[in-house]
Length: 371
Image (cartoon, rainbow, N blue to C red; front, side, top):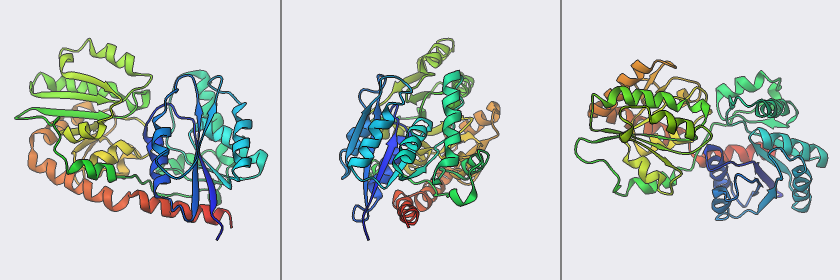
């Protein structure tokens, strides 16, 4: 059987769930069956991209495509050149901008395109909303749309994607780094009665991090031994930091940005929290459960694929901060319950969300697509 050349294409703005997902897939695809390459746009805001350094450790080629501005359509010609010179059979896109640019290039050259929606932004910028809308329209013209969750499949159907072009491949991640970290002793772990609450992810509006700050503020007066650590960056960070200055217990809240010791910090958490309004299936949540950290979050689509209330974590209906606050208390101060839930969550994510299983299903998808 001829080896397929598959090009992963992403317009990256950092090192978030989508970037890590692409790396997990590329790492587990069998190089005897598929040559997996990476194309990434280079913009003024992302001069140094970690995905490039990480992908460079794998077998595939990396193609950096400079963009002169945020929505530079000239990159389509650069993408076409990469496709032709490397005999790409399938382009696999991730994100509204790469979906648009990848579709234009694929149709012009005549190759197959697979689009994987990772989630939908609710940004308020008019131009951004327009391009997100255009990205969603591109789904109808893809050969295959493979969303990360069943809820995203329903969203994609709403954009007119036919069932014969819609394939659900359950999300998977490379958890080997988590396993390597788990056997180490974290020097960052809280000692004594101190408890660290933590979040990892993009600081954008749909993550709804203000609710995390509000819940922490409500508990911090009652429990002087708790702290809050927020890992990540994004367009909402400055606003959140400004809001934190108004809180009584701001001295126990830290914004850590991107960290190379992210997994060691994750290991140090006594509780992992999320208050998102919209998600795919969050990689950070998979890593937290695989690390054995108890989870309290809002019960929304995507998160409910990983956490089942009272079985693998505690979930409150969206927006019910007081109830979620009580769940924080339970998992922080009732050790036996926290361990019972976190152990079950760890077992579940390892059994159902491995990167190797996901890559095998994508290999079948790619081969079937090429006949």
